[in-house]
Amino acid sequence: GYTVNSIGSYAFTLYDSYIKIVIPESITIIEQYGIYSNYYYSTQYIFCEASSKPVNWNNNWYYGYYSYSNIYWQGQWSYNQDGIPMKN
Image 1 (cartoon, rainbow, N blue to C red):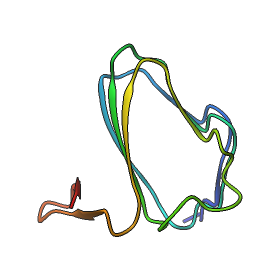
Image 2: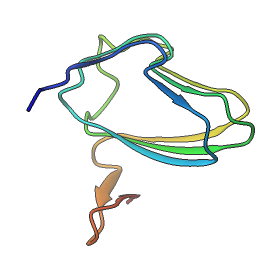
Image 3: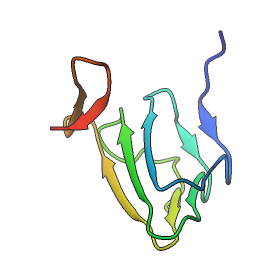
Image 4: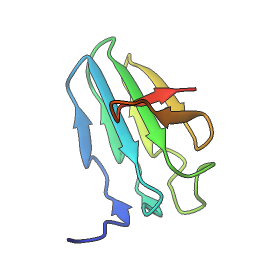
């Protein structure tokens, strides 16, 4: 397989009301609006394997238009017994 290490602008454009995304530690670059939500009053749960925002992630790596986002870093979340990421 291939190792992914970057996410380009608008790579994830979300149009759903409920989304869970896991960003692996191998992602060292996320461009502006790499994860972009354009769904009115949606909820996203973004679980990052990194312990904090990596230096090469754009400060505007995530954008939510009228959405409610929950961004969790390493130590703030874990996988449950079914392999689903959950807040600690």
